[in-house]
Image (cartoon, rainbow, N blue to C red; front, side, top):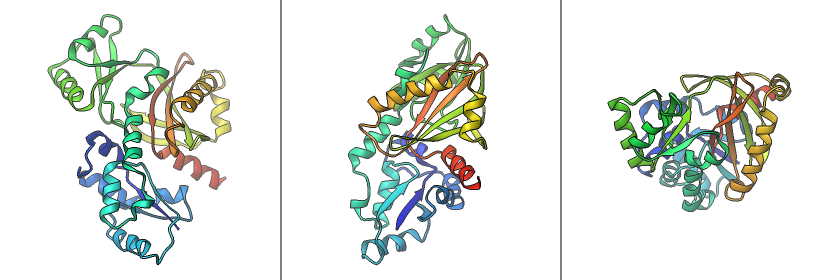
Length: 289
């Protein structure tokens, strides 16, 4: 038996960085309501939220040997979900080590992908950000540990008092801020991987940086539609970087989000060291046919 834990609060847990962080009720309710999303990727597994009241009894059966469990899989690994599983009785041997969990968190820090991004910079103080307005007027400031549209601030030509305070707080808590040029983005395409193997493309929509939904296009449709862009070249660049920088340290689900701009250029937006909604959509489309 495989036990799959749906923990969409993962990004929030990474940002807080504490094993005793308590996710907001809305995140917990979403996990309880939609744990079946993991079933799309793992149809033969038992899929549930880490906050499911039945989890302790399932884990008790595992620890007593009543049910043989070959693996415990999480939507994304962090110290919060690991501690939660241990507290509910999960055998520690089935969980990643603390070192592995820490490594995943470091890989998820947005500074990790700076070497394959264009014109993005680490910012360490308000003055660093203000200097960037001399060369470009429109920027997006990103908290290094954030996802799904959280931790983003759009700035135009200058900083408000709220922006300044946000920079100071984010640098204090997450080491830096990532400044990214505001681009003329027409499409968002993700490269999805499972332990070093290409899983497929996914095409998705956002609104003000917030994930909205996936578009049900096949890999062939996506490759054909974007054949006039830099998508293939960027994919090859990303895969070489992953082989050098990521796969030696991590095996598991991973997605790299790309921005396809009006001029045909393709830029790396972020990397998600976890399962993604794009994987779910891709597998759902494959099964439907």
